[in-house]
Length: 160
Image 1: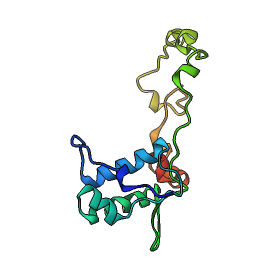
Image 2: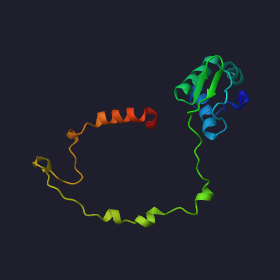
Image 3: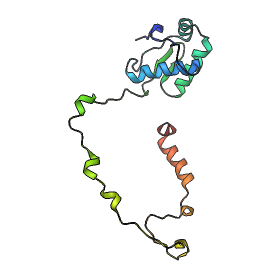
Image 4: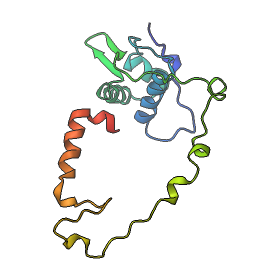
C-alpha cells in the first residue's frame, strides 16, 4: 500500500533540521503502526514538492532511514518500510494491567539496607591473597576489549 505524501507535514514548532524532522515523522509512523512493513513511501520528488523543501533533503533523510533499517530501497521502485523495522510495542493498556501489579517496594521493604557493613584493612591490596568481598582488581580483566566483543556479538544497534 502506498503512503500518500499528505500524511506528512512540518509543524511550525518542531525543532531540528528538516532531515531530522522527516526522519522523525517516518519513524513515528512506523513505530505507531500507521506505516507497516512493505508500505511504499512517497517519492522524494513528491514529498519534497508537498512539503515545499529541497528534494535532496528528503533523499538524505530516506538514505539515513535505510542505514537505520527502517526503510529499504528498491531500484527504480522507490523506498519501502523495511521488514526488519522496529515494530509497535505491544503493551497492554494501563487499565488492563493495573489491577494485578505487584508492589515490590512493599514486599522488599528496607531489609537490603540493613546488611552488615564490611570492614577491610586500608592496605588490603598488599596482601598475597586479598579475598575481600566486593573488591576487584581492574588490572586482571580487559574491560575495553570485553565491551568491543559484546558490541560485535550483539550488534551496535542493541546499544543505541
